[in-house]
Length: 89
Image 1: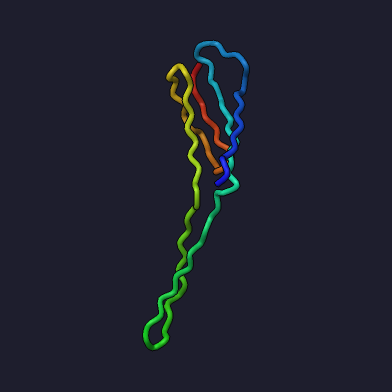
Image 2: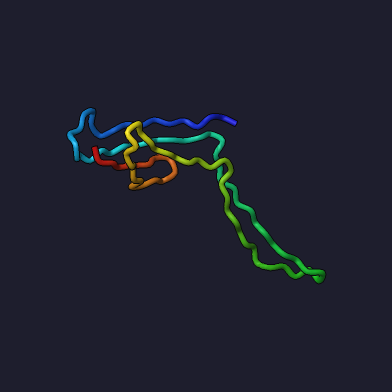
C-alpha cells in the first residue's frame, strides 16, 4: 500500500495572541477507493428482489491536527481531500 500524501499551510506566518489561525490541509492516498456492493436475493422459484447497494471505502484516511502547545484545532470542513481547521493563537 502506498503512503498517504499531505500538504498544509497556515493563513499567516505570524500571529498576535487571540488571532484566528486557519490551517488548510490537502491530503490523499492513491490506495483509497470507494467500492459499491450490489445485493440481489433470489428464491427457489427464480423470483428476485430489487437490487440493493451498500457503499464502503477501502483504506480510509483520517486527519489529526496537533501542535506543540496543546492548542485545540477545530475542524471547519473536510471534503475528503481538503480539510480546514481553526485555532486561536
